[in-house]
Amino acid sequence: MSISKVKFGVVVFPGSNCDHDAYHATKHVLHQDAEFLWHKDTDLKNSDVIILPGGFSYGDYLRTGAIARFSPIMNEVINFANNGGVVIGICNGFQVLCESGLLPGVLMRNESLLFACKHVSVRVEHNDSRFTSKHKAGDIISIPIAHGDGNYFAEPDIILSLEENQQILFRYSDSNGKISSEANPNGSVNNIAGIMNKNRNVMGMMPHPERACELELGSSDGKKIFESIINSFVLQTV
Amino acid sequence: MYLSTITISLRPSILDVQGKAVELGIHTLGLSAVSNVRIGKSIHMNVEASSEDEAKRITEEACKKLLANTVMEDFSFTVKKV
Image 1 (cartoon, helix red, strand yellow):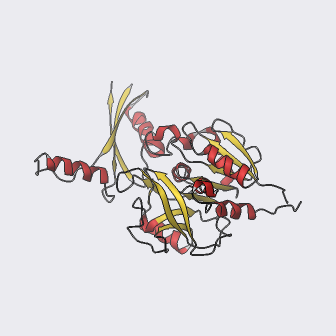
Image 2 (spheres, each protein chain N blue to C red; image 1 turned 180 degrees about the vertical axis):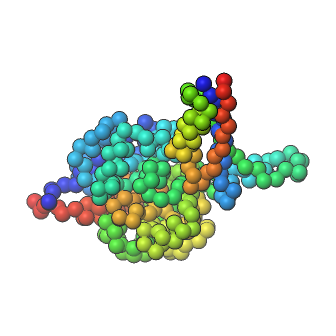
Image 3 (cartoon, chains in turn red, orange; image 1 turned 90 degrees about the horizontal axis):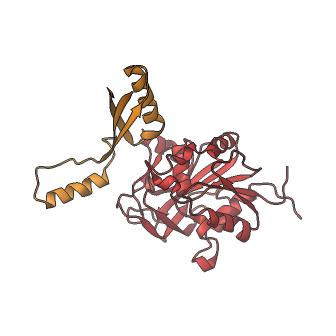
């Protein structure tokens, strides 16, 4: 079925603070449909893509994302994802995806114990995904991070399978694409900044592409990620 | 009624950076005898149950499904009739 615009549903948890950024980027910059979905709702309102935005859902109490995953809307999001629906989690949204089991692993406290808030270089690992198709493998993009718990960890066998299945989409690098511990802002295993699930319809990343869609904000490098997602739907030519 | 006392800590294989930082502080105090500082959480909760076994079962379910993330954390608990 072809559609004229992709509809992004942006979930709003108590404590989300990048929900408006995601809404703005998809609706006003990329000219798609966007709608907020309150965490107590149980209706995804015919969204084509669900965004779990950044922020501090439930005050990050207990663990980041731990309580948000029990919000009523998450049952719908999990069903949607398990039926092939496209879901992306950014920063706190990535943490929620890991807590809910839609993505493997966990985001631990940054190794430095400091909140990291800066633009970082991120290397796009490959373009064989609906999240990176508009990129070239090895593209270096500049996107901001803003997190205290972004230290991605999973058991070695999980990391191995992520590597083998090409599920790692983004890694922290230097501006030349070199992967090093100096370029790793939080201690993540193998400099992992973003991954997708095995079925390739759920993606989580710590950097904020929605905050890097306009040059006025310092970078528009995040735009291609959304353009890739939009491109994965068959759009009606008007 | 039962009182569950739960301890959650990072798994031994996981570097506890917070514990390391606190250990450094303790050493700065001059207490060089201290090592292997690990930081965790302590959760206390009342559980309405008809037996100790039931209280344990409820506590374990809460730990596994919410209170601990077993990818990085271990948990243990005691249950006491109150």
